[in-house]
Amino acid sequence: MGRLDRSAASSFVYAKASGLLSKAFVGANASRLFSVQSLRELYTLLFDDEVPSVPEVLLSKEIEVKAAENFINLYKSLLNEFDRPSPILSEILSFYEYENSEVADSESDRARIMSLWNAVSSLKGSDRENLEQLYKMEISFKNILWVLRLKVYYHFSNDEILEHLVYAGEKHEKDDILAREAIAILGKDISSYDDWKGWRYSQFLNPHEDGVVWEIDPCWIERSLKNYLAKSYKHFFHKDPMSITSLVSWFRIKQYELDCIRTVAEALRLGVESEKAMEVAGVLPRSSVEGE
Image (cartoon, rainbow, N blue to C red):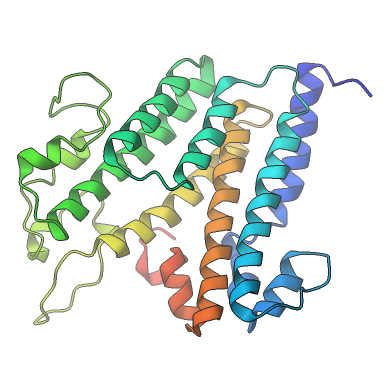
């Protein structure tokens, strides 16, 4: 059977992607994922075949590997409906594979992120507008998290931190569209809540109690941002149906689902309570994130 023309392929792929997303364990449906009581129950929830007769530690790994393979195979099956998929659709797959590899130095991180940003910039029309908005936000968040980690965990100086950020331009300008949000927080005291309560993204801060010693928590903020991004991608999936934007958004939502599956599998293996697992995955209580 031959491939469909581009218009028909886009319509078919969006319909199929919508169906798959309706069954995904994200949003309200995430509660089913985090309510399971054992690894065997998790396996049965996720897959149709019989649960392997292996020790718990191996079953946990099997679930993570199988879930990742299913995710990538589904995505590739969607791409195969197109004769010539947009380069950005291959680029996000390459970036995913890089993120899940053993390579983890900041220079490689920046190079891969810029490759992704350049692929977005090569798009036209609403796809470029939508994905520039999404990736500008996502890369800005990555820069913010790098600032926080380098300040809190490694005590880098501001000048040292500036060398580790991702910039849209060649020069490290303070108003760079990808780095300015991160640069703006360089002077903030990581131990002063008053310094942060007026921050643009203050809704993502770890809780503060009067009279209790407080320090900004990069892990808490990362989880909050991850949850916020997943919701943003869900919005853009529906905003522009049958577009490159919708397929990129589908990929990122399913990637978030995979992160949740990995978190649940690890939590069950270690005996961690479901509420803590939800916190780790970024599935935060409604009161924790403004605007939920």
